[in-house]
Every structure is written in structure tokens, then in C-alpha cells.
Length: 352
Figure 1 (cartoon, helix red, strand yellow):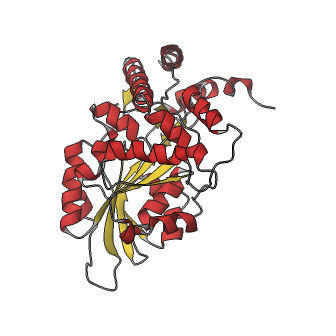
Figure 2: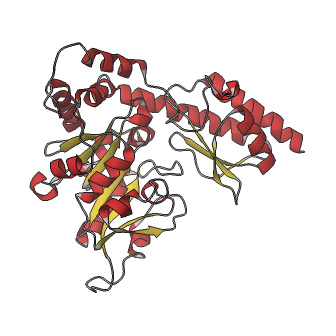
Figure 3: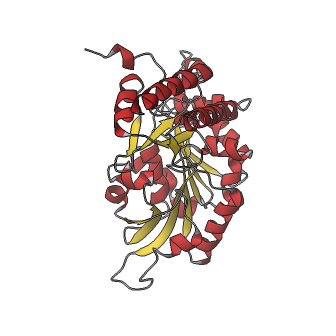
């Protein structure tokens, strides 16, 4: 039997748990107007959505819509790396721990993970993973992959990304940005998401729409010549080419019209700030990382975590240290936050 506590209530488990923004859903319905439309992206919605993304990222931007984040990462990285080459990423990066080995399987490339204090790579940290260049006995580091915002809710500044891109390019390497929560990072810094593209030296962006209010809509954004990437063919061979592309594209049209993407991200971020402030005010609760986007990471006693999860599902980030993760979404309300924090306070008081 379905647990009624876990159905119908907004939780802090993941921004993937939220629904579709009503304006995005309306856009999908409008695209389903009963007329026949050319398939595989030869439709007006795809043209409009592509144009809107180019407006943000600038001329020379290549756009390819895809189904999901894992597929988007695999397609984007495949345009940059060959099987004997390696990808440098942070320990805990989504491509390393949350994609069931998809990058390794479909790219044939090794991931070189680097421990980071706050989820962010630096040139010095990336350099620590580079060995054996020119030696055929070693994989050749070719790509640095970063996540914006990071898996622990921190945000790379534009200058930090520029520094990484300059370091990578000076060594003949590429920079890939996993932008599953790119909107939240842009909102946190008060910049347009286009600032994380070719302006700061990124070569390929995995652009996330799903966590920002869409229904399974992602995109590979490349700033390299299509003749070098073969992305049209890579996407098809990687099973990420949608025949009814208009339904994915229409979602991006909705998100990118009248800055809906920004309003959604600003709201989610604001709710995370509220949650971080109220939770850290509870005696005994400590935040593990600064709250910069829409993720809150806190350290709780195991008994409190278990009891709180009975009412509000969320994920344990590190069972060894007691770190848990709470994510806010475009539809999180102040009341959701305050009720959750209130229950947290009750349970922590019972520990004393």
C-alpha cells in the first residue's frame, strides 16, 4: 500500500521530485495542437528554442536537445574525448557516482577523480591528476569536467571558471560544464547563464531544464565547430535524438520566455537560504557547506535523520559523517520550509 505521508506533500528530497511548472505544461499542450509537424527538430518550436539559447550564449553556439542529464553528459563529453583519453572531475561528481558508469561504458574513457574541499576544482587540483602525458602506457588527460552548481550546492564564480578554462586550454585540454542546475548558479551570482559558456572559455555545456521546472528536457550546448564535434551524429548514435522534438523544445521556449528560468531559480535559491538559516538556528544542527544555490547540506544525528525521513523523505549524503542533503524547488513554499524546520527542531530537542 502506498504510504499517504509520502504522496502529495512537497519534500526536500530532490528538485527532480517536483512537478512541471504550469507555464511549461501549457507550452507542451500548445505544441500538441493536433497538426502534423516535421520530426527530429525540423519544427518551429526547436528553431525558436535554439534561437533563444543562442541569444543567451552568443553567436557560434550549437544546440542539441536531449532526453536526460546522463545522456546529455555522455553526448557532450563524447564530442571532446577519445577512449584513450581521460576526464578529470571532482570526487562525488555526478558523472562519476550517479550515472551507473555510463560515461566509462559509452565513452571508453577513464575518469580521474580529485578530492575537493567544497566540491570545486581549481587548476592546481586538476593538475594533480595529470600524469604520463605522451606516455602510451597512461591515459591522456583531455577534459576537465565541472558541475555548476556543484554536487554540494556551492557555485563556481565566472572568474574561477575562466581560470580553469585558461589552464585547460594552455595544455590542449577542454572544459566541460555539467549544468544540471545552471539556472540556480546564475541566479545565485546575479548573472545570465550565458556567462558560463564561451564567454568564460567553456567548450561544452550540459544544460539542464528538468530541475528548473521542465519535464525531461535537457540540451547539449557546444561552442566548438560542428565539423570537429560531429554532435548531430553523436547524439543520434547515443540514442538521445527525439523524433517529436517539439515537445522538449517547447519547454525551453517557456523557460526562456520572460525569464521564467530565472524566477524559478531565484525562488528555489531563496527557499534554500530560508531553510539553511532556520535549520542552522536549531541547537545541534550544523551546516556542512555554505548555502549558495538550492541545496542545503546539514549534519544530523542518525536517530534524528531516521525520524525526520519518516515525515519528509530526503537523502543521506554521507552516512559516515551524518551529512544529509535537502533540495528546494521552484514550488517550495515558505510554509514547507517552516514546517520542516519546526519538525527538525522538535526532534533535535528530544535528543537533549
